[in-house]
Image (tube, rainbow, N blue to C red; front, side):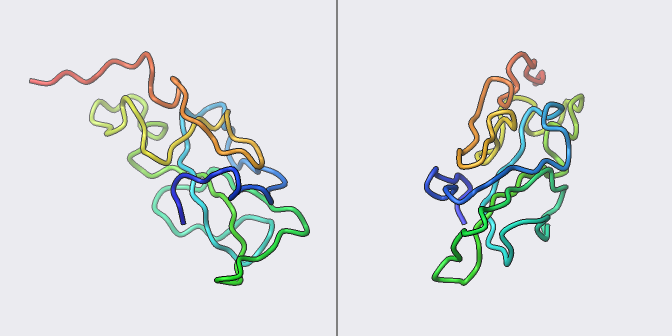
Length: 129
């Protein structure tokens, strides 16, 4: 599915469930996943860790092409800045991955957004020699 969901992709969302406190994270990656259920913790098959997910409304429809539901998951990979805030070799010391958003901007039915916080504003660029 798309790394950057659009509002129409999220119309059936009822709630966002955080497994970790999003206030402690500069960014999370978001993805649309096809799953068998409308709610509950989805299976997570990526490196890193699942940070949160969305539950759908009770009347949410399955996708006609796959017979599955589309839900957002929020996750971090091992090399992401929130996992290594003080590592000078972190690839996202400044900036963030394409699919990353500030978790404080995530709401049911609304795509998250990048913010100065998610982009690492105020962080020094690593010195190069």
